[in-house]
Length: 207
Image 1 (cartoon, rainbow, N blue to C red):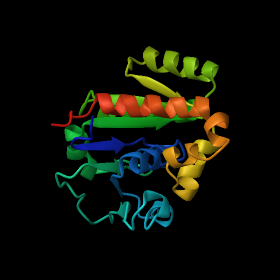
Image 2 (image 1 turned 180 degrees about the vertical axis):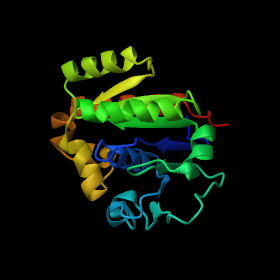
Image 3 (image 1 turned 180 degrees about the horizontal axis):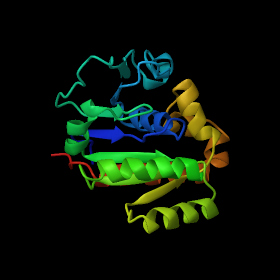
Image 4 (image 1 turned 45 degrees about the horizontal axis):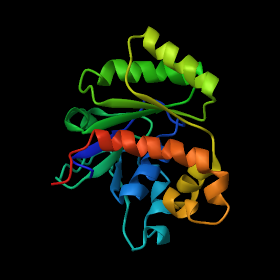
């Protein structure tokens, strides 16, 4: 499978793992990220990233008065701490909307408001619950289902495997090729592989 069209990673709240999911996905597929948050630090970690294997500007900040690029090239849109009106046509035409959240109620309440608004634009949605235990994940599922949201969900545990992607821009595949990491993070890596499989299932198959 290959990425077709584009992916949006969004939520109405900061700090729920949008950047982590965006960067992990971007470095896996070598796709550019466009972000509407002018204060995002991601360019610091991603652009001219030696782990990517080439000098490439992976992250592009889009100013508040600029239009979001909508070329045919596969790409990821990171909504930052909010999804402004420029994102409406992009979400509507996206291959997939990934909605990260945390298991705390304050984060879930914002996630529910986001889903109520943007599920009107697309039903191609998966929910990623970050830093959650299996018990917390079950409670999140129940909470979202009680509000009528039954989209596919995935739990990503708290792990240095994911934080290193964000903080240093090192792709997960690169980390897993290093000695003990393959053993230490084997279960966390399986969760990442599940995420990639879910993303692939929404994409256009290679010709």
